[in-house]
Length: 125
Image (cartoon, rainbow, N blue to C red; front, side, top):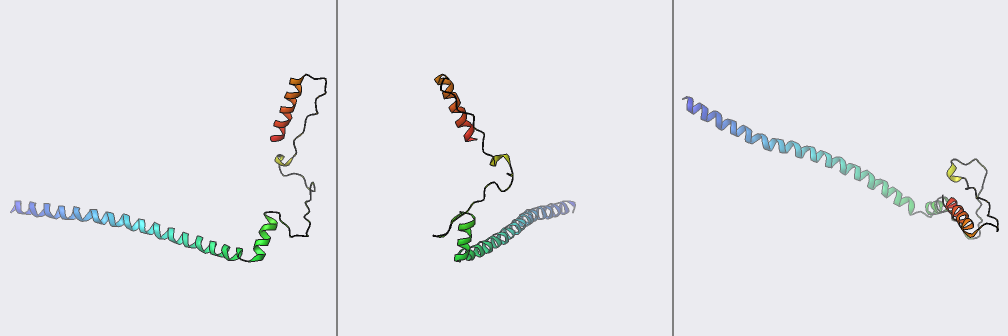
């Protein structure tokens, strides 16, 4: 009798353990499906935004606005003006570099050459 109970308990244990693996796979696949659904929703929102942008870009007014604001274009016959120096620069990147004075003609050629290279390198910054 005890041997029969042990066999039944072993068979039940093996059945339970064999059922746990598919349940664990089901749970992980369920999580994966949830993340895919969230990704699809995100892509749907992105597609809707792009469709709105496409619709806006199909109008001549929007194309003209972008051409004027971002590309600085004007219509034939119009004159574009740029206001320079009306405000203090926001950063030192907008300040023109200082140029060293030109060397005198009495300097040797290598001094004039080095000064020219220095001025050119200063202008490239």
